[in-house]
Length: 595
Image (cartoon, rainbow, N blue to C red; front, top):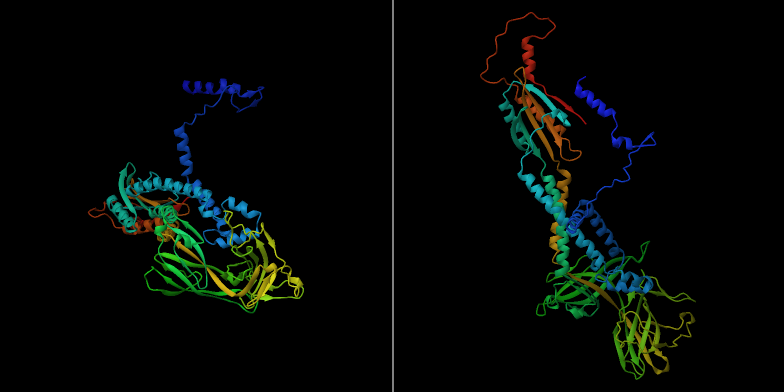
């Protein structure tokens, strides 16, 4: 034992101050830090904090989280009616849920895609994708322009390895390996080191390209949504048979215009609803289920253009001046004539009612504020196919208007339409009105309400007037939308699928071929591979490359003469020189794989 080793052993046996302090009571080792010691945690300044927040925001984990949150945030937009799509259904929801509807409205759940919280998630996702894509694109660009890495010294340590010996020159072996790998579209580079010469090859760069295309396509979809939000518009208009709609701000029931869209940007077209028809299953288990909806319309692309007739159907919109017109809904509008106490006709025409069940029982109100001596109002229901059971109120049993009956409660007084507050056209404010006694003595089950069939009239008490049920018309709701971002969104979706296929289908891997000189004058050819992605070990490519090179490098180098050898006595069981030479020329590769 040397003097240096003795000093080292003595130092190891003698406990230092820290080791002695680690014992509590002399019998137990403790790894707890000293009470007086403390770790110095550096404080984050403003710039460091911003950098930390930026790194967190642009991480893949946060991007996936924001994408998931955006998907979750869109769920209420699918479950709850949206004002920009169907404002009439929002009103129906208000009527059916008078407690919850105002709360949901304050949370902007009827305008999900225009809400502040949805926009915040959208903006954060946009920023996260940009911050994630830019550095990855630069790194991928550098990798595409770079060279494959040099071959490792010990290829046997790689997961896939094959080797064989050959008498061919190193230059020939190297050229054959490079040609083989280039023929398989590998990017190759050659080099030499202390261990010999080598060829390095890499393939599968398009995997990361596909990944970047996918993320860029997601970014393109977000850009398309932003373009549609700023430069597009959406609106809805309910049109009754015989009426028309023109694309003006005043012509819409509900209109949402982009931030950069003005009234002058609306295309000047008009649509006239000539007739609306709907068919329903009239027998079997699916009786009453809708089958077809047809809105026969005449539209004018411009005020001076010729009219064109077209049948608008569900999921089959018409396009006018780049604007899509969709058929979104339909319903019934009873046609009534109201006379006041002086005998003057104060209202004559259809009134829009909203369906509230599968058989299209529809509710609505009729408002006549100019009637004299008092304003008149009616609130009630339209039953398209009414069936009356003795002792009970009639009910609709089929959605088509086969036996329409109008049931109305009558009111007189101030309709509060001049108070300055907005009112729904489908409900009646009866706070300043008196309900009239219009009970039909011949139908006690009908209650205090008018029950009219088509063509029937009813006289109001106290000489306040009369109402006549003239018939039923149908209405159709059209959704009008202009979205200049749709082509961008469609192209981005196609590129997203293409990028995803490339990202999942392409494997990135590396293959090295090393040629090293051996003591017996032969060359050891080693072939090894490494996958850059999980589950993509290039076992087959390495084996095929080794077998191909072994077959090509069996010819002896040109210009070399065999050495003269003195015959020696040998054991008959041992192979002769000819057999040894044959085995050496065959050069069968030896392959192996390690986990």
